[in-house]
Image (cartoon, rainbow, N blue to C red; front, side, top):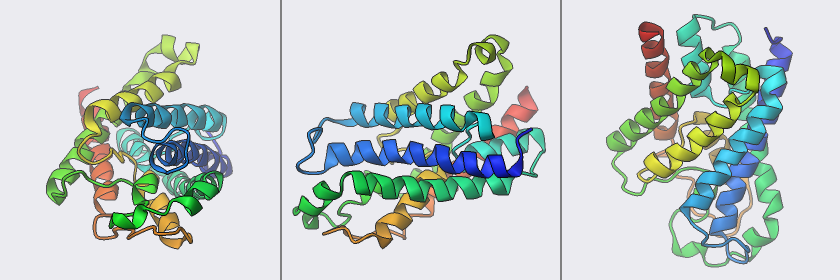
Length: 243
């Protein structure tokens, strides 16, 4: 079992890497004067998948690499072990804030030169957090819950395959799973599927001095937090009951 300190530090580092890659690819595709501008949704999906891969492999020895409060919640409900849950979730939120700040620093020049964002009410928010394509909160909530179940159920099931565990490919498969969720289920909401991934960068967006950044859209912010938590809880309960 990992110590509380290892869990906390591991989740900070792993989640920071995840968000650095994820917010980074969104900035690369979105911002003017970026060489990857307008390269599309597939690039974004793979960027987030590689972020999961890098973050989870890095954090794995310290914490197991949850990187996601919905995953932590699902595991706790399945196992009945809640002792380290605060350390996981606290580390994930802090890591998400750090990762989003690092992504902003990487693209600082592009943010400074991005002079057309005031044409959009949400400005640069989509680089940091999710924005629904059609804003219907109950539907957006259901979408996030279902997509998160599609993440957490396989995450709970994969360790049961002894061969995968011994080969070290479980984390790789989870990363590919995140890519698949983005491609298949990400269209309506931008697939937060992770409360820390959305909330931490949204806080950073609200605080940073970004030109023409627009609103941080706090009226919607509860959806990508509550939806994944609901999905993670349902996945944990279902897995515990069925397996």
